[in-house]
Image (cartoon, rainbow, N blue to C red):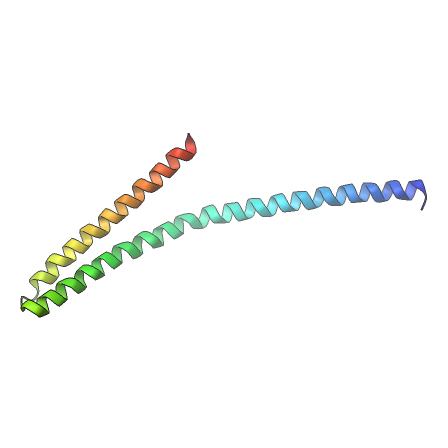
Length: 107
């Protein structure tokens, strides 16, 4: 191999490694963007599941107590309200955590 071919080969290898780095940077950026996009959706699903679970647990406890004491539907209604309050409190706590995370990232 002469020096001209060796120079071309070196030049090609430099261009190839540069292109690979650019591609890798692009892939990392796309993955980061995708994770940021789905983070909001994940949070929304988590909050909705927590709220529905709290209501369901309140309903279940109230229904069981109504069956035990024969006070249909009063305890069920009261515990559904307690479950709703607990669910809303969980949503509030999660919103505070997210707000604190955003504030800590900004500073």
